[in-house]
Length: 140
Image (cartoon, rainbow, N blue to C red):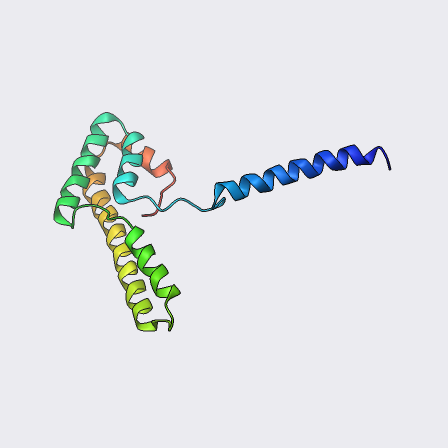
């Protein structure tokens, strides 16, 4: 039994150090926010040959000029959602309206990405299309 005590002490210190690290970090396992359309296009363009990357970025620029100009931050949605969820009494109609607005924004981002790819893919080289086909596709 006396041989176990030092090992139990060391294990306890390691566990406590880990827990203190988690507390100090704040939100230890919060996933990153989803990437915006511009970030996804940049991700794709980095994998393409230079000429294809230029075509893809030009298609994205045309799409962003036709839409409302890029991906707005989702932080206002999160703040408004938190305010609604913390309100007393709970505002069911406000919650439903905000989730519908959030859904429309998410669908708008997906449509912008789809339109950009639809415009660019026919102009890309076969090698560029092959590289995109092999990539993991992030969601907006």
